[in-house]
Image 1: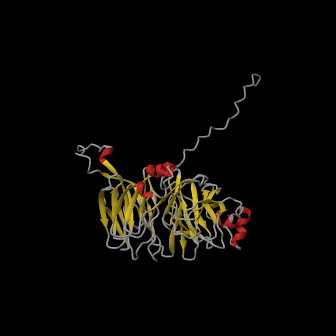
Image 2: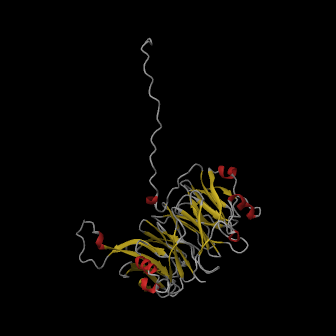
Image 3: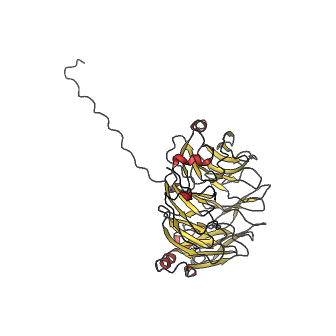
Length: 439
């Protein structure tokens, strides 16, 4: 039946669930990188594990990451969740019908959202249990986005829908979902063509509904600003729409369609366009702060790590630009075609042969390569300093800096858990002076 959730257990052999000891045998001779290969570059293998997948019938479609979990989605619709630091398998779920079109999973602090066909599934991200499911009125064209109050999803007809999360939960508790899904829609914003980027939430603009303005030299009160959601359309425009009133705050137009997801960092939006340009845009007013022109259109998301913006144009190699100025930070790397991850010292990128190039973050010099051709499914990780890769049949490996037990949070450093301070080890007291000793 359409939309039925099946929770897979470790005893279901047909789902391809295997113990770690036998997982490598399923790879038909494929090997993980050895400790000596990694140690040459000061790296180590943190863990490896097998996703729930039938390698004779499906392959890995997506990998996604948040601050707690790594998610692997197969072409059959099976989602496997791992603890991203230990590799422990947390749960596996079949979402929708086998081989339905799907988008990468999206999460917040407690929930995981997956769009399969016309249905949005919401799961508890730690247990995999179904929280609710929702029907979308039009065919989705992007993965969903979520904030504290609303769910946003773009569709092929050019609409951006905002669903009320509290109302969704009420309808589900009343057993009225998915039939009454439309009752949870807060608003719909219509553009001329297909929505091409997932919504980016969290930005703020000065509200036109607040009378008056703060006195010169004073800080505007919080109520003088409205939160906005940003998204792009194939009509060549980037939109900023207030999350509550659905007011258009600003609109940024390009000469060609926008087909790559947005990058964002510290109030800046990074817009990659088919006009072969990357724009850095102030999210409050929509003004372009700088523009870098490439020789080819850009169809993959720009990745922001610290002050570095990594861009891979179509057949155009790897570029690293300064986030604040748009200046090329080091020479163009035409032999590299994908950004993978960054540590404080290194950047990892893939070449045309599937090898992992290790670059110096200081000057972009190539320090060496890791032979990882069998691990052809890559996670473009701009959140942490971990390198995650998978074979098409679901063997996942996590690589980190040697001895780097706690990850570095690039994108959301405020989410790094507060580590307990360890009390110093007790030291034996100084011996009592011997009264018979001669000074």
